[in-house]
Length: 364
Image (cartoon, one colour):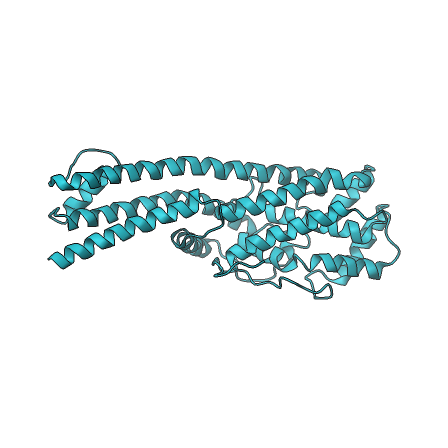
């Protein structure tokens, strides 16, 4: 009997500690440290959603269903912690003398939720009641502070994504963006007007979407928008601008490109996607030379001034694209992004989604 009590008490303490550590990593720690509990919850929930909204269903249907994926995960997360704490303290009450089997559960639920309709039968258990009540209030406080920070980051992200529709259409296209800027005589202002704010955007996305990974799966209010296809459009626009357009080289586009592909790589590291961290400029990319040549035809027809050496332009563009090509396509698949030029349209057939797993070691 003594051995059983000790084991029940140790199991209860371990369960409570595990739940609190998970909450600490997820809500408090300002670092992309993954909690195995939260990760497991989102993986199993995603599998359930994939049964209903699998690759064979239409995008419109999948988008409607997957819109509930991240919010439901955020709702279940504190419930999981509360249940673990409730069961953990029930084990502690059992170990310290509460009987029969249902009494520890009743006392634990009353204490954790601060309902106060029951109290332990032994005075030495009162200290555990106070501790559990404090833990319950702490979890509630963490959740109250966590959700506003999540949606504040979401709103910051969606502001520029929404503004991109005015410039690049829906779905966003680098061709549409450059043609529109040329049409209104705004090509000379593309760096301060577009690249500068998006450099800041990528820095914010890297920090927020690795610290709070549920943001990756929060879908835009408009089904045709997605943060990842918007990112791909802006990165391609910068690469095309420096490689193709006949104007002085703009280092701000280079800085935005580096900020962008580092951002996408850090998020890919979090989910464990494989990619070449140091690709050669001549490595293959998902965009074909024929697609690139058709882009040149469209830009030329719209009056965009082009560099005369198209072969060199292709090499310059591919040399930039190779840095973010793999991670862009993988993240588009992960979030089931809406079809968009040169990003999510690279996914063909019933290609399965990447596994949502954590790398054991971060990549540089």
